[in-house]
Length: 108
Image 1 (tube, one colour):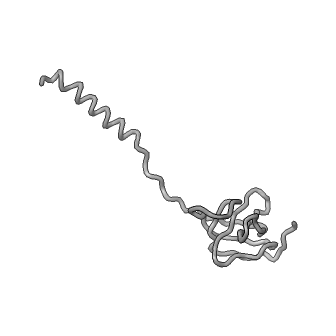
Image 2 (image 1 turned 135 degrees about the horizontal axis):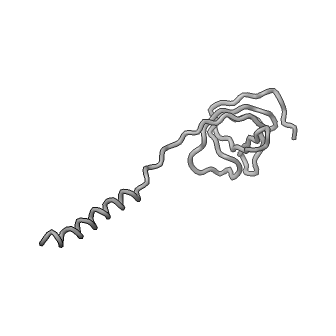
């Protein structure tokens, strides 16, 4: 084979390699999102699920964990975003690390 015959083949191989590398996306980074929120604890529609509606009403969290607050009180929770599926269909799911009652009751 002459250089004139090899050059187009080599060029195509080099372009295919570059194109393949350009199309590869970096693997997604695992993101741990720490959450601190204060709000009213409510019963969810699904049995056994608890919600936290922030005081400004802008966000609703679905609370998961061993030690959960009672509905009807205002609490501050600390936790991280829950990974995986849940049976609770409302709110942003979070795994509660800790919570503290503010001493207030929900206005609703």
